[in-house]
Amino acid sequence: MINQAGFDPRQVGNAGADAPYCTTDGPAVESRSYATYLQGQRAFYNQAPGAYGRCVLSDFDERPRYPIETPDVNAIRWMPDQSFDGYRQAVRNATADMATSTRPSTVDNYLFLCAWNEWHEGGILEPNERDGCACLDILHTELQLQGPGCVADPEGTPPS
Image (cartoon, rainbow, N blue to C red; front, top):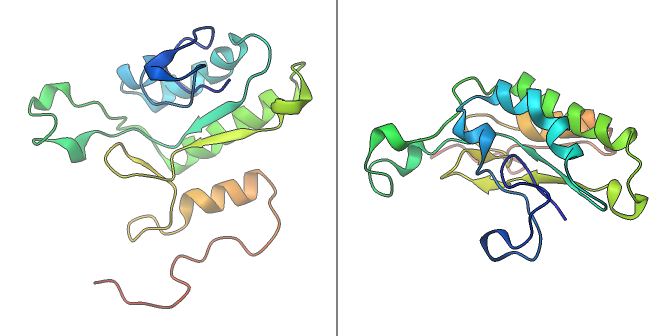
């Protein structure tokens, strides 16, 4: 029912799932280009038949896996052109696709985010020392969410 940048959205049974799911493996990651992901994002969504929930990829970066899990530095996949502006565009692409969709509305208003805390793959949305609330602030603005938004450190704890 959901997919991202990788498995063919018409497939079933990927990686043990009962339907295509939100993942980071696939053409966008293999191209090592976030711009390529953005360019193909809506076309990728439109391949899926019937009910479909879109997913937005914040980033993909296997460099934290080197050299332990991925000893070959040439095998490491990452998207050096990823940026917050690119992430903002990815969210806009997904919401524009949802707004013009003719799929069943029961699932067409769901947007899945890949991922909250995938530090080992660069999919980081949670507040952190490096980026603060940047990804969550983008979501808050682009999805027109209510409330005050993200507070990176609500207790004021100094970094260790």
